[in-house]
Image (cartoon, rainbow, N blue to C red; front, top):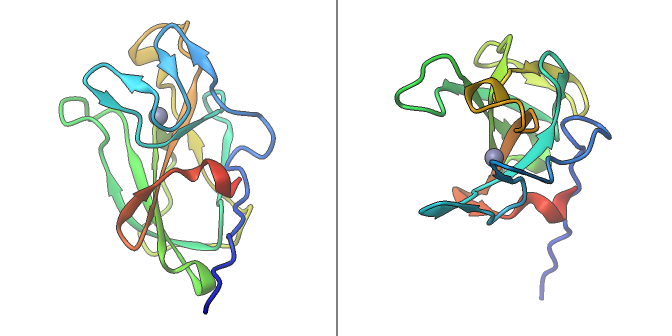
Length: 144
Ligand SMILES: [Zn+2]
């Protein structure tokens, strides 16, 4: 018989909280997004606010969350050490760290972009966090 200990992550915004609900939707995992469901959780962060590493990690990729809007960026990170089975996508960030950069938990990685500007000011500005374990999407809520 084996036991898997639940890993704990650090909030990427420390204690600024989650997005909650606004006229554009809710920030929880599984929230409705019209024809699909929300694949991550949204941390409330003002534009320019720091984004911290949730666990010891390495930046493995830069990408674009929207196929038709190259203004917005994402980074994908992979855990190091005991966290290596986890990868995560952080969307709507800027001042991107180079691919290959390594961070310790709670170290500043980048800053929040202004995603509410794409919609309107009633959207709570946020960074989207999407978690995978061995490539499989997970609800990240229990890790924080
Ligand atoms: Zn989101």
